[in-house]
Length: 330
Ligand SMILES: NC(=O)c1ccc[n+]([C@@H]2O[C@H](COP(=O)([O-])OP(=O)(O)OC[C@H]3O[C@@H](n4cnc5c(N)ncnc54)[C@H](O)[C@@H]3O)[C@@H](O)[C@H]2O)c1
Image (cartoon, rainbow, N blue to C red):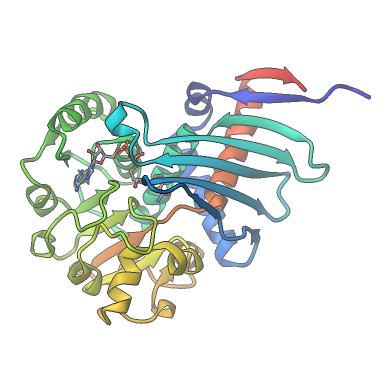
């Protein structure tokens, strides 16, 4: 029997193999397949580790008919940033769909940031006003970086602002992202100041309570809300959710996990889940995207295993073609 080898892809390999626009294409396809019933993806397993804010998620998925499937293990430790450690550590294992043979192991934190940004890119492409040219990012962490990067792929952004209560984090974000994206990125004095000046807003924080005031959001704004993923946490004010066209990554997952929608639903501020469109339905042309220049649109993402499966497959195939990564014999 020939020995089994698998490919190990580091964070740098993943970013070299997969551009943000390729990630947006892969993730858009995954959303379309998911909404059309073309994916196997059971609810993710939450292993909560009390008494601290620590959770390990196990996320398997197969986009049916494709040649690989993936399982991600991601540890989200809320107390890590205060110890100067990353909030999330993760690995993705990619298996051959036909034989179950392991084909790759890759850094899951980099893949997660890429596919989470890509989801917001896919949503922004369909929901933001075409002429939107200003962006605000609330939170200056790992996800915030790929949120802004993805928005800049799908819209001609001229300037951006960032707000984070950690002023050093906001300043570092502004310097790094100005250079990376060749646009001015400036720290704002408050979240309200940032969102009031923006046509596109991304929230990417671990906050349990709304990160801006509803009054600050202008008509016509598109919001990507990716931070909160438990039923008791929300980043977006209920009043903003109530006046927005609601689009989700998955109705089923949001009904389990999205406090941003479940809390306003319990407060009778918003309509039932069948009024929330899935991004895959919009991308397939089955439901409308933005309907008027003045409406507020809100994309709520809790994060799905199918995004990991699609991004991991795209990264693996590109890395194989480019000769990236390290081969390991099992
Ligand atoms: N939807 C998804 O698919 C998805 C994927 C990955 C992570 N997440 C979630 O996104 C959130 C951010 O993750 P990350 O990896 O960027 O974390 P991170 O620790 O790298 O960054 C979070 C940043 O948010 C800032 N922050 C905290 N409260 C804030 C507030 N009220 N206003 C503004 N900024 C605030 C922190 O100071 C920090 O700089 C987490 O809750 C994580 O679970 C979601």
